[in-house]
Image 1: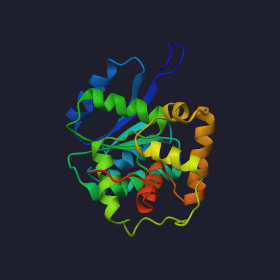
Image 2: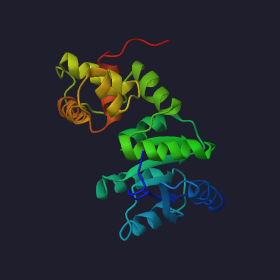
Image 3: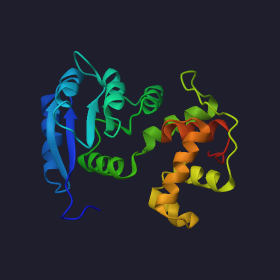
Length: 225
């Protein structure tokens, strides 16, 4: 929770539909811990905007004229890796979700998501880096049980993890926050963050999505029905 002394989370909405942008902006304007600082109607416009203003979180539509979200996402992550990006789409496409999460997306929402879901996703990505929901879970867990897509290269497929690291990884896959994991294994949140960084180094994963893929491929998760 943010206190009154803390700055609101700064958000930019990138979507070519004016009415959608207006609707989301209006909904978020009622939240004191969120501030929409800019709007863009395509990826090129957004990248130009980022030269002068820096948001904490971007809501990025996948399909836009001139430059869509799929082309824009890698550029944002390369130039501004600290910015969290939530992809917006009309489609529930599991292969697309997998691709976008590997490119660095912090969450994936359909545009029919209500304002409270969008608000929750913004806050969760800002605090915990990722917001997982039923869409991302299906793509990253169910699809990836069958095979790891060829585009995903885990550098250390035979990485040896300690029991503690495996426990932390399993809890990450269960959508637990850093604080919840810390309480579960009786360690400090800072130690959990250090373990997460070590897991990335050991497995060659570049993101939490990559760690989940490593867990699935190496059968570190109990089978779910």
